[in-house]
Length: 161
Image (tube, rainbow, N blue to C red; front, side, top):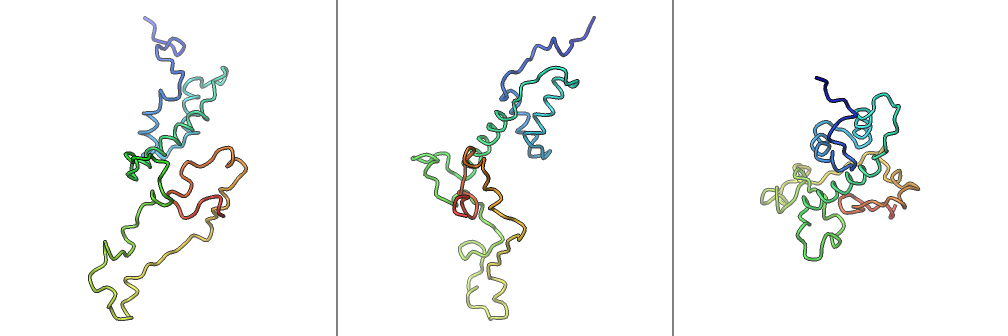
C-alpha cells in the first residue's frame, strides 16, 4: 500500500486564514515574524522550488496587523465602547508603568513631606535611548500603509515629528 504523496493531500488551503491559529500560537513563544512563517510554509509546500507558489505574505501580514490591532484594543478596554474604537483618545492604549511613582497607586502617605535627602526615592526618572529615532519610521511607504494605532500607545504620532 502506498502512502499519501504531497500532491494527493486532502487539505489544500487556499486562504492565509487557514494557518492563522497556528501562527498566532507560535509567534509569541517562538519569536517568529510573518515573513519567516510564510517562507517556511512555502518551503513545506514545495521544497524544490520547481513550482510557483502563490505569494501570501502580504495578505497574511495584513491579517497579522489587524489581529494585533484588535487584540490591543480589547486589552485596552475599548471593545465595548458605545461610539466604537474610533473614539479612542491618544495615549489611551499605553500601558501604565507600575514601577513609576504615582500618588494614587504606589506612594506611601506623606511622601511629599520627606527630607530633601530622601526625595529622590519618589521622583519620576525618565530615560530615552539616544540611538532610537522615531523619524526613521517615517518612510515613503507610510502614506500608502498607514499605522493603525498612530499615537494611541506611544509618545508621539508619526506626523508630528
